[in-house]
Structure formats: C-alpha cells, structure tokens
Image (cartoon, rainbow, N blue to C red; front, side):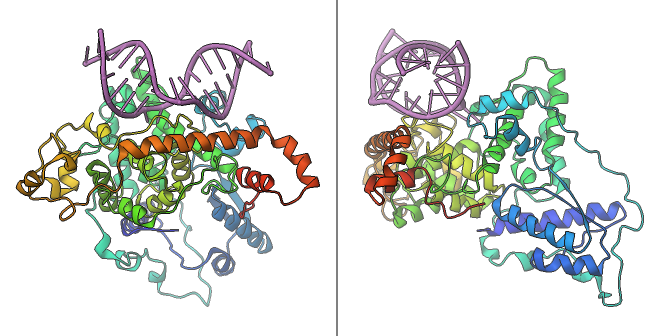
Length: 486
DNA sequence: TGCCTCGTTGCGTAA
DNA sequence: ATTACGCAACGAGGC
C-alpha cells in the first residue's frame, strides 16, 4: 500500500488525538508495533487477555489477517467479539437480502436498505471503568513509553512532501468539522452534490471523508445527525445527490467490494469490463504530477498532491482524463496514484469510483466525456482555481487560462509563461483523442457483449478444443485469470 | 423474448 | 437562465 506523507501525518494526528480523548476517559492508547499475527499471541499472554474485540473489515488483506488472529485467539483461549461498525449497514446482510449478490445499481441498493433497520449510533461514555489498564507481569517493561503514539518524525519518512496541514487528523477536528457543516441547516437540507463546485478555493463540500475513513467520525453518527436536521426541513434533497445520499454511496461501494476480493483490479473482477488500456509512462507521469498541459487537470492534480483532498467532481475530471476520456491508461494506475495521495484513501471507494469513471462498471454512458477545458469553466469562469494551483499561469487572462495554447507566443511572453518552457504543451489534443476513445470504448463493450452472450456456447465448446483464441479471450473477459482468490 | 425507462453530476449548439 | 437536441447509443431492471 502506497501511503504519502500527508496521510501519514493524518494518521499520526488521529492517533495522538485518540490517546488524548482516552486519557480524559481514564485510560490511554497503547500502540503496539509489529505484525498482528506475531504480536497478538505475545499480548494475550503478557496482558492476560480474556476478550479481544475489533471492528470487521471487508478488504482482503484485513479479512485474511483477522481470520488468522481469530485462530490465534481461539488457541490462546481468548474470546473474540467483532462488530460491523465502519459502515451504517452490514454489507453481508445486504448481499444476503439480494439473493447472495451485491446490487450493481444504486437504486437497487437503496430499495434494499430502505427495508432494513437502522443500526444505533453509540453515545460516548463519560468515563471508562477502573482497571482497564493491561496487567503487568514480571517480564513487562516498566517503561510505558514503548506504547506511546508514534511521532510525526517516526511516521513521515519524506517530510519534504508534506503540504499545508489543511485537514488535521483526529476525532476532535472531525467533530468540529461536522458541527461546522451541520450548523447551516438550510445548506444541509438543500445539498445537491452535482451543484457543488469542484474548483472553489475553499471546499464546497464537507471534507468529512478522511475522518470517516480513519474512524475519527462514525458514519452512523453523521447519518443520525443528518436525519435529525432533515426532519426539521421537510423539503429537502434526497439520495443520490443529498448528503445522506453521499453516505449511501459509501455503503454501496462497500457492499459491492465485500463480494469480490479482486475489486481493486480489472483482471478477475466480476464487475469490471475488460478494456485494452495501453501503457504510457510519460503520460502517466505527466498526469500524476500535474504536467498534462491542461491547466484545469493540472491544478486538480497539484491540489491533490499538496493538500490530500480534491472535490468529488474534480476526481471525475482527472479520472476521466486519464482513462476513457483522453490518455487511455488503466484505471488501476490512477487508483495507485490516488491511493498514495488521498487522505481519504479507501480500498472499496477508490476502486469503485475508478471503475465508475472509466465506465468499467456501474456507469456505462461512456460517450459522456468530461471536457478538460469546459467543465471547470462552469463554476470558475475567471480561472482563480488554476491561478492558485498552477501559479506559472497566474497572469493569463480568463479568456485563455483554460486553453493557454490559444495565446500567441508574444502574448505568452507578456504573461510570463511560455509553453514548452515555463509550462508544458498539452500532451494530447482532447478534441481528437476523446472521439477516438469513444470508438475504443464502443469496441470494448461490443467484445464484452459477445463474450457474455456466447458464454454457454463457449463453455461446451472449450471442453472439446482447449487452447483456442476465443477461449483465452473469454477467460480474460470473465476473470478466469484471477490471481487473488479468497 | 423484446421493448421500454432510467441512470448522482457531458458537451456543444440552438432556441 | 433554462431547456432541448444530436451525439450515436451503454447496461440493469422491470414488464
């Protein structure tokens, strides 16, 4: 897993705040270093553990790890008590209610959860009971500093990559942020995600995603608070565009991801269309570092690298650009870059959204392509966002800041930024490539359709003639080459 | 089977 | 400002 400096900092701050809050409750945080399967058996013995309790997780790495820890606990006579609390609903329950399959449309998902009982959000205890400290035995180190939170210096190996600490980690900041957002009840009630700006200078949305991801904020608590507010405002927006709708998107992707351990890759992924993406390390590098020559795209990618958060629609614009829109590079590559840079990096949400944007799964209207020029203009016609994150273009007038190649050479000199010298020429011509790529998408969908409708026929056929090309193609398209199995 | 509607957030152009 | 249409046309789900 790639973890950039900004997310390491967020984790460190979250741990420090958690420790602080626990100390107010008559306890503290004990941070133990090492691999769970090696460390837990030692702790069971050293601390005379009777009960191990933790939150369940759907990510394959965590599922495997937790299964091993459970076995070790059983062997040590430790009772295990797990809770599904990271999401509002239990993904497994939704899958069970949908005849063993995760719903692949949001509306279908909603129709299922609307019939489910809403789990309670727990209240915070005023104080933990005494005796919640670990028992020390003769071998225990007296210096409890070994259990202290890691420091920033210990976690952040490349401090030069740290940006402004715009979104500090921790529950305290999470609750402060939530209250600040919920304070304007009319705004909450009217919220419609498509009408929020991806390129405002300050976030136009709540930026609670990093806090939900790290468990600083409970999705159930936020959901309950939203419902309380909506009850007072009968005329309110609704899923999928409302704030509750945003939480439901999170649930939607968690449910889909829980049903497929290959959710984060194309091959062997039951949801993903198989598309012949092409490798292009120069283009990938230019995209990842904000050097595509498209100011709107570059501004977004630079904001991501500096601050660790970009608006959801900004993610749409750059994800479409990397994949089906312009560069025709695999969504897995984009996923890797986001994984490193996003504070709110989440296995299920990152993969699910990349599949959505690349029209590989869940979303299929691939002829709807975001324009790297026009899209940003709708909410920032003057280009203030570009001037902030691509400062070399700061002197370009509104008329051509989204399309600097339209400025004459003498004008470029006048604005203090010559293309090819101070800022890159655009690496592709959107008007040309996006039309080619729509045709490529059409062809990929056609192959997928043929493979799908010819399935039974091929199944019989392949028994008799192993190794033919059609069989191979189908194996790829249906995920037969899966490497990761649960 | 086939047909229809709908789908979180497209763009460019026209009225 | 808002709406409609062509673009060339997807899959899921329901009947």
